[in-house]
Length: 435
Image (cartoon, rainbow, N blue to C red):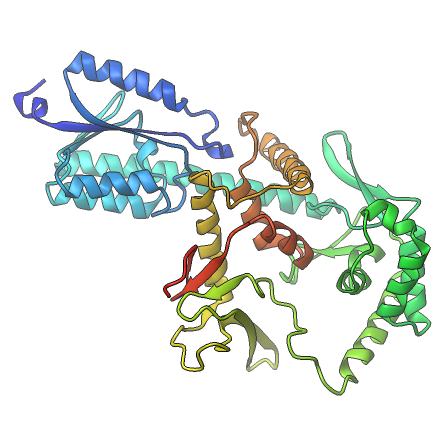
């Protein structure tokens, strides 16, 4: 050990994520024990210990890692002691931050169980290669899961909970669906009624009076769900996955209705929609309607859709959210694109879960669906020969899956688990208003 190394003050950083890509990693306590023993052996001065349970896939999302970067810049210490390079970074953003701090002379040394990295070109290059390799492994695993999902779709099995009228079951390790013989006749009758001239409201009144469907759903289904069921192609044997992707598959399940009956119902519904004289304000469906408030003035945040006509004649639909300006007509809060809002919402939920916030309340229904999704995801990973560890699924991971791939009803259900006021300011999400 050189004299220069002896003067370095280290922060011991231990990290573990329960996500599938890190389930085989050493536990946090084991990392700390091993690195503490190494520090004693090599006479390293450890002045800080940070323990973090968080994925390193995305940059800027780990509170303690960001705190460590800040303290390095404040010269609280100038070395990092960690089990392996991938404990520090599995993404380009955080890796760039580490190298930048090293370039500025704030980080003199990174010590791992088997390697050392100092502020010289060769060792920094090696560090970047090892962390980039960890990112490559993450990306490949993500591709493997998507490939497994696509393979299941091509086999005719939709990778999602079965809609009303079907039951989930497992056969030879593959999740499948079968007809619910008690409910399927009701679904067929719904479509027949609309084809014969009944409205969705007529169907709902009939279902509420009949009562048989309520025994399975444990409630009278709302009118919006009636219409979603009437527009669900799954019932005649085809499905689109992911939703709104334009990619369609032929299902291997038994259809409840014929394709011809489904088309006839769509004509009836389309005729009704096109001949409405006026659409009631606020009746359009937006995923995050009434979820946020404006952080500047406190008014509700509303959704608005825009369409762009392409040269091909097709229209692209875009959704934006903005302050309703009911409180302050001159509110300066800008619009935010739904795609950007979803990405920031996912990161916000990840931070809430990391802090073990009481703002997340997971009900029994969501827990059951999380377990089903975890079982499916683990099955895909096993088929790809990826080792898995039996640990509970994180709420943030299920939240990401539903927000990106779920139906509107599933999204509203998962959003109801966030039990705190949410405010929007400059496209970012906060738990407190500016006023």
